[in-house]
Image (cartoon, rainbow, N blue to C red; front, side):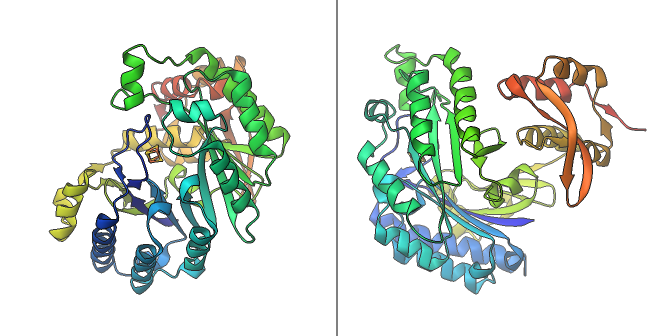
Length: 389
Ligand code: SF4
């Protein structure tokens, strides 16, 4: 499958935990950004005729795409259409929203362009924690946005929460999950906070002003999973939960190692077993686009066989369906039975069968506390596989 990603690098205010290269929204730069993005799209399309027309999904992420005024969104969608991407034929058109830029008008504008799925960055319903992590919205704004989105017909909605925030209790996080799951949502994501040393929050943790209690990660994660699954939102990836049939098509393409093109500063692409990374810093991305998008300005990662095996293990095991024995065989490897047995006997891995395209395939997937020890398990498997003769 081939998918398209657009990176919008603007946010109303940069959150204290953020370590992405985002810029505070500035109306004077929106027009330039939209022109540059369209130039990048056209340049790709001319070099790869027909490829955009084969896309199955479009995802606008950031940053905060909902910060971009409607006229510039329209300009970008028009450009994609002119280059052959028929938005009406896509199975999923997702856009990330933050509560402060969610309004009847912004939702209507997005939907008129063809957006059929909105992902809302809520993070928590705790007013104090919103301040601790430097989010710019209030609890009320989050609830208003959630009410508006979940009552909009013909729109799929995801909401994101975060956990293991400084000062957050297990009860507090589980209350957030419980409250969120009372809304008529078909998709929820939650992520443990990763304190980046280069973020403002990271500096405060370094200075000892705030602390993250890593011991709470497991009870928060396991408790959150339990609540969501009891309410019919099933884990299909380590941080993503959906009612059957509402899993994100676009994100599954990443985890299944499908091809995609990313446009915008810092956007990644994966084409023909090569990963490309566009310049992340805005002025460098601007220079790259202005100079005609030369491949020489991209960081390029040509995957060797070992890299592909590693990716297959990481990206498959993070999904509930796990890794199919058939996929390992296609890659010419088999996993070390004694290593698998060791994790299976602890209940951290399980062997099973998976119905896929009307075929039953044997698979290996994470189980129980294995989801907490995912990194360790994958590293262990990756260090011990053998090549098939
Ligand atoms: S909304 Fe997301 S991308 Fe924007 S500043 Fe906050 S964490 Fe960073």
